[in-house]
Each structure stands twice: as C-alpha cells, then as structure tokens.
Length: 140
Image (cartoon, rainbow, N blue to C red; front, side):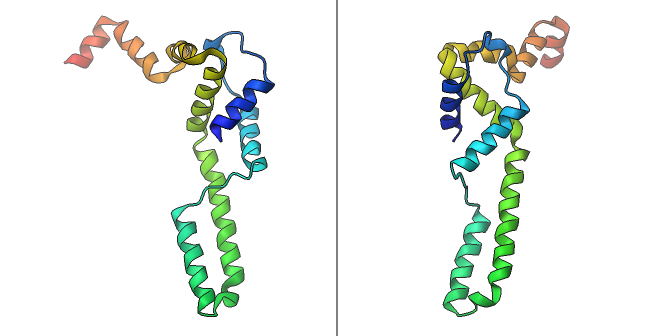
C-alpha cells in the first residue's frame, strides 16, 4: 500500500522544489490512512487468526451462537488495536512513504541527496566527524 500511495501521490502533487526540504505533513499521514481504508487494506494478526480458527471450532461444536456477540466484541477490539498500531508506527510509515515518494520524483540519486539532508543517522555521523574531539571520544 505504501508503494501504491506513493504512486498516487506522485500523480496528484507537483514535484517538490527541493528534495532536501521534502516532508510529509500530518494531513498527508491522515490521507494515507484514508487511502488504506478506501482500498480495503487489512492485515491479519496472529491473534486474529487464532481466534477465527477457535470460532470455527466453536461453530462445529454447536456453541458458536452462544459466543457470537463476544466474538464480535473481540473482533472490534482487534480492529481498534490495528488502527492504533498504524498510529503507533507513524514515524516509520512516514519515513517509508517519504522514501517512495522521493524516488518517484528524483529517482535513487535524489533519495541519496534526501538522506544526506534528512536522515538522523547520517546527521549524527556528520556531527561526529565534524568535531575532532567528538570523533576521538568515540574511539576511546
């Protein structure tokens, strides 16, 4: 879905003026979540799969109707968890989306330029290497 969203974004937004300044907003993250909903995106957790199997067994044993409402409540709780999981991983999702979108406009070379300007690990490496004393402190 990240790949599809990045492609959709590319066709519906002008090219950013400066790859080093590219940043997705909160509104665009919400747009991505709406994109997931409109494309019927769903992921199945291990717990969800196990509960579905257990519910099938309960139906075979003729006790499915006794637990129907409880099972529906459980599914609703799992769906709520999945929505929260997307929000909890917002930074990672935004990073993946940004990478894909930047590649659409500027190809892999542009992605390297983008990383040099925005990647926290590269920024920290530059900070360490730009200070002799800081660099030496890592060696000791």
